[in-house]
Image (cartoon, rainbow, N blue to C red; front, side, top):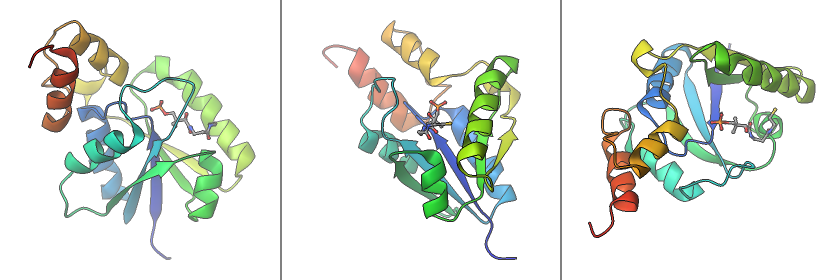
Length: 163
Ligand code: PNS
């Protein structure tokens, strides 16, 4: 069997400790992981694609087999082009399930060989989401336990005037 590669796509706006936890779990299972930062969904991101790529890169040890790339267009096409048959998604709670199930089946429709593998993040991160991190940071709360230090610094700069 050749190298087992997997794709971990997402918005990562911003990357949280929950994402980082999923990345380290995934590299225990696969030879190489490609973290694919979605260029643009319907959501307007707080951070540019380049900033999101940089934040993920800075938050990982550099001795692990992870590449961080930009995903533009369909995930299924990106997977075909890069000859990857596994997509990793983190599943935190039942509330994630419906959307994840829809995406997994749509991706299978677009790319029948593509398998979606769900990983469970560490339980401390069950309630964690990029959306809540941004909201708490915007309202002046402490988010330093939930995101890598580089992200905490960036959020503080955005939301603390005159810093
Ligand atoms: O972190 P998110 O916002 O939950 O990630 C969603 C993401 C980026 C995985 C999804 O929106 C996606 O795959 N976007 C790429 C475009 C695409 O293929 N859309 C159809 C998915 S079935």
